[in-house]
Amino acid sequence: MAATTAACQGIWLKNLLMEVTGDDPGPVLLYMDNKSAIDLARNPVFHGRSKHIDIPSLATYLSENMLEKATLEVVRLLGNTVKPEIARTNIQMLGALCHSVGDRFGTYLGVTIPLLMSYMSGSENSEEPRECILQAMESFLLVCSRDVSSYCEEILHFTQKFLRYDRDVSDEMEEDTDNEIYEDEEDNDNNYEYIDDKTASWKVRRAAVKCLAALIISRPEMLPKLFVEACPKLMDRFGEREEVVKMDVFNTFIELLRQTGNARKGQNEDGPSPICLVKQKVPKIVKLVHRQLRGISVNTKVAALLVLKELAVVLPVCVADNFKILLPEIQNALCDKSSTSALKLEALILTRLVLASNSPTVFYTYIEDISRPILLAVRDSYYKVTAEALRVCDEIVRVVRPKTQGYNFDYKPCIYPIYNAIMECLVNQDQYQEVKECAISSIGLVVCTFGDNLGAELPACLTILANRMGNEITRLAAVKAFSLIAASPMHLDLSCVLEHVMADLTVFLRKVKD
Image 1 (tube, rainbow, N blue to C red):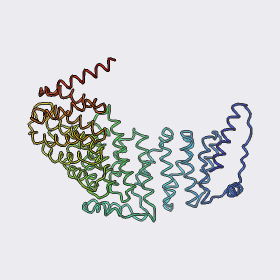
Image 2: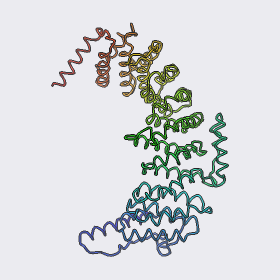
Image 3: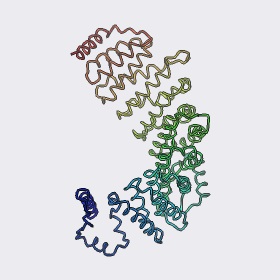
Image 4: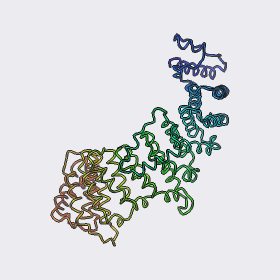
């Protein structure tokens, strides 16, 4: 590594002298006292310990002529290679060169990609070269997006082929295994305990998933084709045995949904657009994700909720239509003692997004089932979970008594459970700043919405809010809460705190004027 760093510095100094003097000082002479490096320089053969030489770091300093020679030499060596370990090194070299020199490598994709694809098609090749080829393709897609466009169809074909790759299991056996897993929902995660470390086939599948993700990111114009061809196969991999691969599958599917949301503007949802294709697949997506939520792996549950969250951003109405199916799993995520904070947060964020973007009438039949775990989460020991639960309470308040008239729903049983949970956070001074601000904002909304039903509780609540105006940390949130209360259509009686609040506001205005 020392020799590599010294060579980089030597090339940089040589280029600097050429710019200053206009003369070529000739090759840089590098002195090295390491015996292994000397022997390797005299006899440049492949060795298991020689792969640490970081040649791609030197590539950024190469001229176009030298880069061409280096790339074509690696391609020649790869074409003449028989041993998988040597082929792996040459393939890694091509991917690393592309990553180092950027779009300058696009000129050589015409000789690189056909060779890699022909090598990948060989049935006798082991997993490691295939994994390296897919990683190189990922680099080509992300770095040379313009020059690689003519090969995207072939790359898509290979990624789909190797999404299900398992050297010891045929496609038919793999499909049967997946079906058995889906049928046995009660023992869902136990079926995924099989680990194919001996063949490392999972590394090929993981590389294929990441390559597909790069294709989704770099080629948004291919979204309709990706939904028709790649999306079903990607959804089938929700039941992937290896959890590390499953996480990449979920992340890739999330990226597919995100790109669909980005491409939504200016498109007709009734035509063959990506958003229309997503709508058609929503029932199956919810069904597959629901199965994953019933498993025992917390990481899988978090990833499944992330998929639903992105789907709720793209198509909130479709998620709301299936929310009743998902509600038991959301309740378990919030109430189960084994749940992690990350799982609770994602469940709360999903609930908030769905409540905020749909008609209140959708949730009236099971609003009590929604609010019960939310109020429990308000009392959680982790402050971020508490703050997010308070934000969900705001949406529940807006749902049970919306500003728009014409909703016939008995909201009164919901008032005091929500009010008491928020007041516990409000009166507790030993709270994080985020929780304090969320509690003040939430109680302001509760008073604004339910103030005519609070009775004797109203003066005590207003007094606490007025006291929060005297604290510099919570002052802004308290002023916003009183602004909301003052604009309430209930025309609430604020006489118990009016003098105090007006005096504080006058002082604030004087400070601003000064």
